[in-house]
Length: 276
Image (cartoon, rainbow, N blue to C red; front, side, top):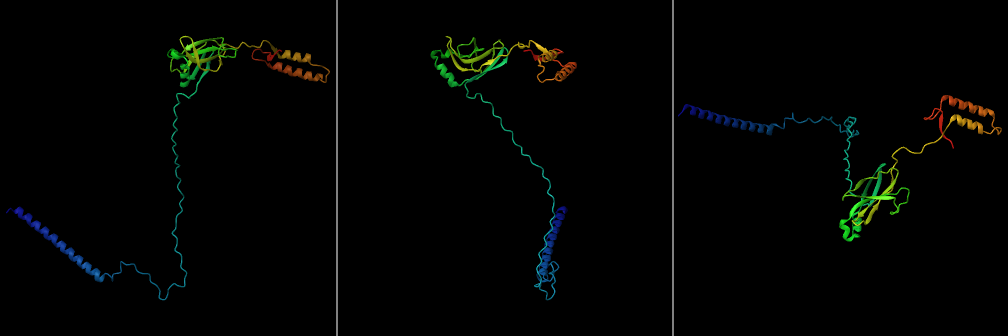
Protein backbone atom coordinates (compact mmCIF):
# COMPACT_ATOMS: atom_id res chain seq x y z
CA UNK A 1 0.00 0.00 0.00
CA UNK A 2 1.03 3.60 -0.46
CA UNK A 3 2.62 5.20 2.58
CA UNK A 4 0.52 8.36 2.23
CA UNK A 5 -2.68 6.35 2.45
CA UNK A 6 -1.44 4.46 5.52
CA UNK A 7 -0.50 7.76 7.15
CA UNK A 8 -3.96 9.21 6.50
CA UNK A 9 -5.65 6.11 7.94
CA UNK A 10 -3.45 6.26 11.05
CA UNK A 11 -4.22 9.93 11.64
CA UNK A 12 -7.95 9.29 11.20
CA UNK A 13 -7.83 6.47 13.79
CA UNK A 14 -6.04 8.83 16.22
CA UNK A 15 -8.72 11.47 15.78
CA UNK A 16 -11.44 8.87 16.48
CA UNK A 17 -9.66 7.66 19.61
CA UNK A 18 -9.13 11.26 20.77
CA UNK A 19 -12.82 12.10 20.32
CA UNK A 20 -13.83 8.91 22.12
CA UNK A 21 -11.54 9.71 25.05
CA UNK A 22 -12.97 13.24 25.34
CA UNK A 23 -16.47 11.83 25.44
CA UNK A 24 -15.50 9.41 28.21
CA UNK A 25 -13.83 12.21 30.19
CA UNK A 26 -16.87 14.45 29.90
CA UNK A 27 -19.17 11.62 30.99
CA UNK A 28 -17.01 10.84 34.04
CA UNK A 29 -16.80 14.50 34.96
CA UNK A 30 -20.56 14.88 34.69
CA UNK A 31 -21.09 11.76 36.80
CA UNK A 32 -18.88 12.99 39.61
CA UNK A 33 -20.46 16.47 39.48
CA UNK A 34 -23.91 14.91 39.84
CA UNK A 35 -22.79 12.77 42.83
CA UNK A 36 -21.20 15.81 44.48
CA UNK A 37 -24.29 17.97 44.05
CA UNK A 38 -26.52 15.17 45.24
CA UNK A 39 -24.72 14.41 48.49
CA UNK A 40 -22.64 17.48 49.30
CA UNK A 41 -24.47 20.35 47.57
CA UNK A 42 -26.91 21.03 50.52
CA UNK A 43 -24.04 21.83 52.82
CA UNK A 44 -22.76 24.53 50.43
CA UNK A 45 -24.62 27.65 51.36
CA UNK A 46 -22.33 30.09 49.62
CA UNK A 47 -24.81 30.59 46.80
CA UNK A 48 -27.83 30.95 49.13
CA UNK A 49 -28.65 34.33 50.67
CA UNK A 50 -28.05 34.28 54.39
CA UNK A 51 -31.15 34.86 56.46
CA UNK A 52 -31.13 37.90 58.68
CA UNK A 53 -30.03 37.07 62.19
CA UNK A 54 -32.69 37.68 64.86
CA UNK A 55 -31.98 38.15 68.51
CA UNK A 56 -33.33 35.52 70.84
CA UNK A 57 -36.70 36.40 72.35
CA UNK A 58 -37.28 39.44 70.13
CA UNK A 59 -40.51 38.88 68.18
CA UNK A 60 -41.33 42.48 67.22
CA UNK A 61 -44.93 42.19 68.36
CA UNK A 62 -44.66 45.28 70.61
CA UNK A 63 -43.57 47.64 67.80
CA UNK A 64 -45.65 49.38 65.19
CA UNK A 65 -44.98 48.35 61.65
CA UNK A 66 -43.22 50.98 59.65
CA UNK A 67 -44.45 51.87 56.21
CA UNK A 68 -42.04 51.18 53.43
CA UNK A 69 -40.26 54.20 52.09
CA UNK A 70 -41.64 55.47 48.83
CA UNK A 71 -39.12 55.54 46.08
CA UNK A 72 -37.84 59.00 45.36
CA UNK A 73 -39.21 60.43 42.16
CA UNK A 74 -37.47 63.20 40.32
CA UNK A 75 -39.80 65.93 39.17
CA UNK A 76 -38.73 66.86 35.71
CA UNK A 77 -40.13 69.87 33.96
CA UNK A 78 -42.11 68.91 30.91
CA UNK A 79 -40.26 69.56 27.74
CA UNK A 80 -41.94 72.08 25.47
CA UNK A 81 -43.56 70.38 22.56
CA UNK A 82 -43.64 71.91 19.15
CA UNK A 83 -47.12 72.92 18.08
CA UNK A 84 -48.45 70.89 15.27
CA UNK A 85 -50.34 73.02 12.85
CA UNK A 86 -53.06 71.26 11.03
CA UNK A 87 -52.80 71.71 7.32
CA UNK A 88 -56.30 72.55 6.20
CA UNK A 89 -56.77 71.72 2.55
CA UNK A 90 -57.88 74.62 0.42
CA UNK A 91 -61.56 74.44 -0.47
CA UNK A 92 -62.33 73.48 -3.99
CA UNK A 93 -63.67 76.44 -5.96
CA UNK A 94 -66.54 75.28 -8.12
CA UNK A 95 -66.58 76.31 -11.72
CA UNK A 96 -69.03 78.97 -12.79
CA UNK A 97 -72.14 77.51 -14.40
CA UNK A 98 -73.01 78.22 -18.01
CA UNK A 99 -76.31 79.74 -16.93
CA UNK A 100 -78.42 80.66 -13.90
CA UNK A 101 -81.86 79.89 -15.29
CA UNK A 102 -82.70 83.58 -15.85
CA UNK A 103 -84.51 85.11 -18.78
CA UNK A 104 -83.10 88.63 -19.13
CA UNK A 105 -80.83 90.97 -21.05
CA UNK A 106 -78.62 93.63 -19.43
CA UNK A 107 -77.38 96.82 -21.11
CA UNK A 108 -74.32 98.83 -19.98
CA UNK A 109 -72.43 101.91 -21.23
CA UNK A 110 -68.83 101.51 -22.37
CA UNK A 111 -68.13 105.08 -23.58
CA UNK A 112 -70.03 107.94 -25.28
CA UNK A 113 -70.42 105.95 -28.53
CA UNK A 114 -70.46 102.28 -27.49
CA UNK A 115 -72.76 100.06 -25.43
CA UNK A 116 -72.29 96.52 -24.15
CA UNK A 117 -75.02 93.96 -23.56
CA UNK A 118 -75.21 90.38 -22.33
CA UNK A 119 -78.17 88.04 -21.97
CA UNK A 120 -79.49 84.65 -20.92
CA UNK A 121 -82.64 83.22 -22.48
CA UNK A 122 -84.32 80.04 -21.25
CA UNK A 123 -84.83 77.33 -23.83
CA UNK A 124 -88.53 76.89 -23.11
CA UNK A 125 -89.12 80.62 -23.76
CA UNK A 126 -87.37 80.37 -27.12
CA UNK A 127 -89.38 77.27 -28.07
CA UNK A 128 -92.68 78.96 -27.15
CA UNK A 129 -91.87 81.96 -29.37
CA UNK A 130 -90.75 79.77 -32.29
CA UNK A 131 -94.00 77.79 -32.09
CA UNK A 132 -95.94 80.99 -32.82
CA UNK A 133 -94.19 81.32 -36.22
CA UNK A 134 -95.40 77.99 -37.57
CA UNK A 135 -93.69 77.20 -40.87
CA UNK A 136 -91.51 80.35 -40.62
CA UNK A 137 -89.79 79.11 -37.44
CA UNK A 138 -86.89 77.52 -39.34
CA UNK A 139 -86.04 80.83 -41.07
CA UNK A 140 -86.33 83.06 -37.96
CA UNK A 141 -83.11 84.70 -36.74
CA UNK A 142 -82.11 86.03 -33.32
CA UNK A 143 -81.57 89.81 -33.42
CA UNK A 144 -80.93 92.77 -31.14
CA UNK A 145 -83.21 95.75 -31.69
CA UNK A 146 -81.68 98.96 -30.29
CA UNK A 147 -84.09 101.83 -29.47
CA UNK A 148 -83.34 105.52 -28.96
CA UNK A 149 -85.61 106.43 -26.03
CA UNK A 150 -84.14 109.81 -25.04
CA UNK A 151 -86.48 111.86 -22.79
CA UNK A 152 -89.52 109.57 -23.29
CA UNK A 153 -91.30 106.83 -21.37
CA UNK A 154 -90.77 103.90 -23.73
CA UNK A 155 -93.74 101.59 -24.30
CA UNK A 156 -92.25 99.51 -27.13
CA UNK A 157 -93.65 101.58 -30.02
CA UNK A 158 -92.77 105.23 -29.39
CA UNK A 159 -88.96 105.20 -29.83
CA UNK A 160 -87.36 108.06 -31.72
CA UNK A 161 -85.63 105.49 -33.93
CA UNK A 162 -84.21 101.99 -33.79
CA UNK A 163 -81.87 99.67 -35.69
CA UNK A 164 -81.45 95.89 -35.76
CA UNK A 165 -78.32 93.74 -35.32
CA UNK A 166 -78.32 90.07 -36.34
CA UNK A 167 -76.34 87.93 -33.93
CA UNK A 168 -75.01 84.39 -34.49
CA UNK A 169 -76.41 81.41 -32.62
CA UNK A 170 -74.73 80.68 -29.30
CA UNK A 171 -73.62 84.30 -28.68
CA UNK A 172 -74.12 85.51 -25.10
CA UNK A 173 -72.92 89.13 -25.34
CA UNK A 174 -72.40 91.93 -27.87
CA UNK A 175 -70.81 95.38 -28.30
CA UNK A 176 -73.16 97.92 -29.90
CA UNK A 177 -71.95 101.05 -31.67
CA UNK A 178 -74.56 103.81 -31.32
CA UNK A 179 -72.31 106.77 -32.15
CA UNK A 180 -74.49 109.27 -30.26
CA UNK A 181 -73.29 110.75 -26.96
CA UNK A 182 -75.74 112.02 -24.35
CA UNK A 183 -78.64 109.84 -25.55
CA UNK A 184 -80.76 107.15 -23.86
CA UNK A 185 -81.07 103.62 -25.24
CA UNK A 186 -82.62 100.24 -24.48
CA UNK A 187 -82.40 96.90 -26.30
CA UNK A 188 -84.81 94.07 -27.14
CA UNK A 189 -83.63 90.57 -28.00
CA UNK A 190 -85.97 88.41 -30.05
CA UNK A 191 -86.70 86.48 -33.24
CA UNK A 192 -87.13 88.19 -36.60
CA UNK A 193 -88.68 86.39 -39.59
CA UNK A 194 -87.97 87.21 -43.27
CA UNK A 195 -91.36 88.90 -43.60
CA UNK A 196 -90.47 91.40 -40.81
CA UNK A 197 -92.35 89.82 -37.91
CA UNK A 198 -90.53 90.45 -34.63
CA UNK A 199 -91.19 88.51 -31.42
CA UNK A 200 -89.48 89.76 -28.26
CA UNK A 201 -87.74 87.39 -25.87
CA UNK A 202 -86.59 89.95 -23.27
CA UNK A 203 -86.14 93.74 -22.88
CA UNK A 204 -83.14 95.41 -21.24
CA UNK A 205 -82.81 98.31 -18.84
CA UNK A 206 -82.39 101.88 -20.12
CA UNK A 207 -78.96 103.56 -20.12
CA UNK A 208 -77.66 106.99 -21.14
CA UNK A 209 -74.37 107.60 -22.90
CA UNK A 210 -72.16 110.36 -21.42
CA UNK A 211 -71.14 113.57 -23.15
CA UNK A 212 -68.26 113.43 -25.57
CA UNK A 213 -66.83 116.84 -24.51
CA UNK A 214 -66.70 119.24 -21.59
CA UNK A 215 -69.86 120.42 -19.87
CA UNK A 216 -71.73 123.35 -21.38
CA UNK A 217 -72.76 124.68 -17.96
CA UNK A 218 -70.51 127.62 -16.92
CA UNK A 219 -70.79 130.52 -14.43
CA UNK A 220 -71.33 133.72 -16.37
CA UNK A 221 -70.49 136.31 -13.70
CA UNK A 222 -68.23 136.30 -10.63
CA UNK A 223 -68.25 138.86 -7.85
CA UNK A 224 -64.99 140.13 -6.34
CA UNK A 225 -64.43 140.59 -2.61
CA UNK A 226 -64.17 144.34 -3.03
CA UNK A 227 -67.56 144.50 -4.74
CA UNK A 228 -69.06 142.32 -2.01
CA UNK A 229 -67.74 144.66 0.66
CA UNK A 230 -69.13 147.71 -1.12
CA UNK A 231 -72.52 146.02 -1.44
CA UNK A 232 -72.60 145.20 2.29
CA UNK A 233 -71.45 148.74 3.21
CA UNK A 234 -74.09 150.39 1.05
CA UNK A 235 -77.04 148.10 1.86
CA UNK A 236 -76.43 147.87 5.60
CA UNK A 237 -79.01 149.90 7.59
CA UNK A 238 -77.59 152.55 9.91
CA UNK A 239 -79.25 153.46 13.16
CA UNK A 240 -80.86 150.05 13.81
CA UNK A 241 -78.74 149.17 16.79
CA UNK A 242 -75.57 148.64 14.73
CA UNK A 243 -72.75 150.99 15.66
CA UNK A 244 -70.19 152.40 13.27
CA UNK A 245 -67.43 150.48 15.07
CA UNK A 246 -68.88 147.23 13.71
CA UNK A 247 -68.49 148.43 10.12
CA UNK A 248 -65.06 149.80 10.93
CA UNK A 249 -63.95 146.42 12.21
CA UNK A 250 -65.52 144.71 9.18
CA UNK A 251 -63.76 147.18 6.88
CA UNK A 252 -60.45 146.54 8.59
CA UNK A 253 -60.92 142.73 8.37
CA UNK A 254 -61.80 142.82 4.67
CA UNK A 255 -58.88 145.15 3.99
CA UNK A 256 -56.53 142.66 5.63
CA UNK A 257 -57.97 139.86 3.50
CA UNK A 258 -57.50 141.93 0.36
CA UNK A 259 -53.87 142.56 1.29
CA UNK A 260 -53.22 138.84 1.73
CA UNK A 261 -54.50 138.28 -1.78
CA UNK A 262 -57.34 135.84 -1.18
CA UNK A 263 -58.77 135.00 -4.58
CA UNK A 264 -60.07 132.18 -6.76
CA UNK A 265 -57.91 130.13 -9.13
CA UNK A 266 -59.17 132.07 -12.16
CA UNK A 267 -58.64 135.67 -11.05
CA UNK A 268 -56.35 137.18 -8.36
CA UNK A 269 -59.18 139.32 -7.01
CA UNK A 270 -62.26 137.19 -7.55
CA UNK A 271 -64.15 134.74 -5.35
CA UNK A 272 -66.56 131.97 -6.49
CA UNK A 273 -69.65 133.79 -5.35
CA UNK A 274 -72.15 134.07 -8.13
CA UNK A 275 -74.17 137.25 -8.62
CA UNK A 276 -77.86 136.62 -8.30
